[in-house]
Length: 443
Ligand code: GUN
Ligand code: ZN
Image (cartoon, rainbow, N blue to C red):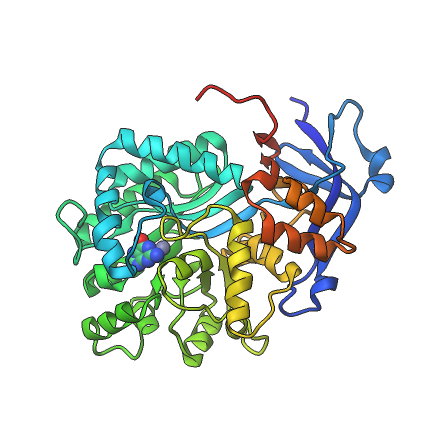
């Protein structure tokens, strides 16, 4: 069959370097009139339209977005799809919030029909927000994972997800056992890991809800197949940190609980990492694991302020991605998440440059997942996951955009004022899966 081709034209932004290590404005690539050529789900050409117009194969449809910004699709490195129904739950901090809202909500995912409905709604919302890849927690129920991957496979989105492992300190119906959790995980791995664009993450919820035996078995699971991910929570809340110290008195630190079980290495993604010290950052750097910065969640639960610029210190940079952490987070939009990331940085006396911000939401997220050779930038050979951002999506944004003189200015307006309304379109492996201005579809 002939290759399936399409081309997108419009202003584009992507990255040639890490803006936390290099000058942010030089790390940012801005092409005011770009062409992106896509063949069979991959980008084959990217550059100035004028330079590439003769390279467009005869008959290739070209879609133009002259007033938008083409970007790599956003990467959400920490999110719980089953918590979508309980977003914006009032009045608690982490441990009480888990008991009162989270566990009852997750209990419903024993029902595969419910799981399928929420997975569908969640993935549709992600695409509306311009997010094309995510590291996703399911629940303790294998059917919640099956439902998620089935829907992601149908959309052909590149997703990392896994079954929550949780064998203590959780209500009846939400606990597994060390061996049961291991066996169920391995069966899901063999069914989904590397099938199409789906990837599996071994997912112990956090050290408080797994026995040491379960954490050790999670470490053993990771060694059973190549390329597996690991995701969990680390040092989010002070009461949680105190509890972990009681539960694991022999470990030097919260991070060491995971390291001791063989859970800290490349493709490990640790959510939050707020209450950590310099030694922990050094360990993360040396191990190659990533921290997921979830500012809307940290502000919502009153957990604390992530020290982003300490984490990415060029002397021993730790990989950092951006997470929405729904349902503790308050938006699925990476733009809204960047808005809060900027304010959290301000509260620590630091300035998040717009190029650094958009890098976190795209290339940095991809790098923290070790997927930067496939997603997160616009370049030949990359998978064609793209979002089309509209910096003039509302009257307020339009009048503000008028005053922007540089691309950095415009990106800053997008991240401070933008949300799903600013996502004009989302492409997954070259296919248009979200079109903001299309007539509404029947569900
Ligand atoms: N720590 C353990 N479980 C969770 C969760 O579901 N959300 C958040 N934000 N923190 C957690
Ligand atoms: Zn979380």
